[in-house]
Length: 266
Image (cartoon, rainbow, N blue to C red; front, side, top):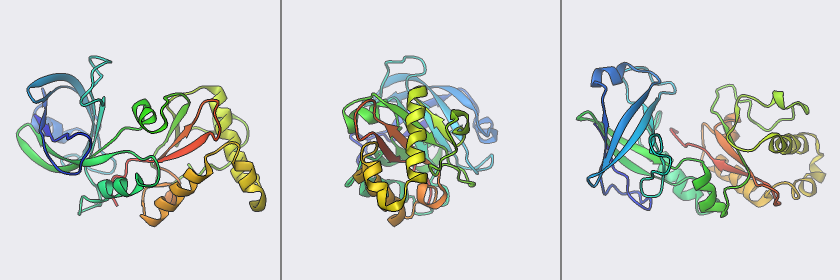
């Protein structure tokens, strides 16, 4: 049984408890590294069939690890307080457990960023401590922040080797694979991403503002860079060119936005 507090609308205090019932033993859960489980979530005596995936990162078996809970696994229309995904992060490398929520609350004063709050997690009767619950970067996020779910989304996966710094790799879309993971949009959207990379990589510095303004929200990109740098996001774009999100608006301009990623850890 997994018990998590899921307040609404995303305050930082713990208020209510939601329970997720696993049919897997506690020892089995602790041994697993990256597994998917069917589960039943209960909140205020309301039952929601769901699924949960262990997300370990660098955490070995037997230790507290992050979880991703899907509310729409059994019913695509099912939501919890308007949301279909819970990202429960273990705060790896952050003994204060404050960085994700603090980062999110500061960032959201200046640009769209995922909401975050604290949750209490109990698995099969055992207290696994406090987690950070960070909003999913999905169509719900786009509607909340941009009033539309149109356009293309990329998740730039976290990687110690980086590789997601929007460097120009030529015009072949096959060169823009990992760590770029396209979540929506097609070939035309990929072409726009390639053009953005070309402009950033090959435009002389003095000509860059004029070249960027037709294809990107320059003000939002500058806030993105400032926050990523000032708040020392050790997994983000500024430090290792990975672990962030890209949103390319459909036919509207300016077209490119970047969003802060999971914020798990230091």
